[in-house]
Image (cartoon, rainbow, N blue to C red; front, top):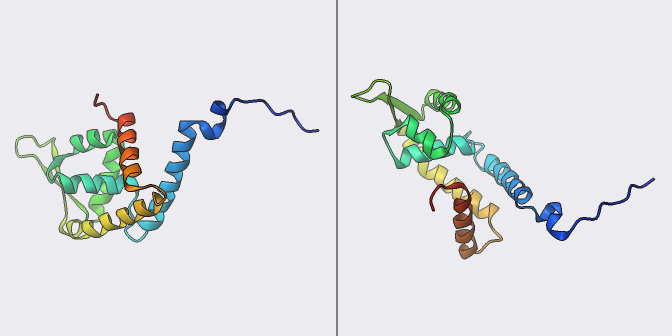
Length: 150
């Protein structure tokens, strides 16, 4: 016996919901990123950490957490992993030993241009259906959702 279908309006259909579409796009992006970055053994979060440290050598761990929207409890094991892999160095701040300044190791600095190229390749593949203008619009709209700027 077949159950009767609930009638839903077009705006209530699953594929019309923003959250559903964001999750689907995110899953596709994460899977493709994983394939692209397999050899580097980087995940989006660890790549993001390395990219920000590269952009801001000497960044404090607390600032890295803030910029990435992470809790320090979640960041600590990831920093330890990157340090063990020889990608990140931690130095105590001269004025306050509780503060850790972060920098990429020489190996990571040398690898970063290749990793950036891989991420660009991933984004080009993932966003191939969008024009340059549509990509810029998507980026602007996504930033509107998660940033605190008004």
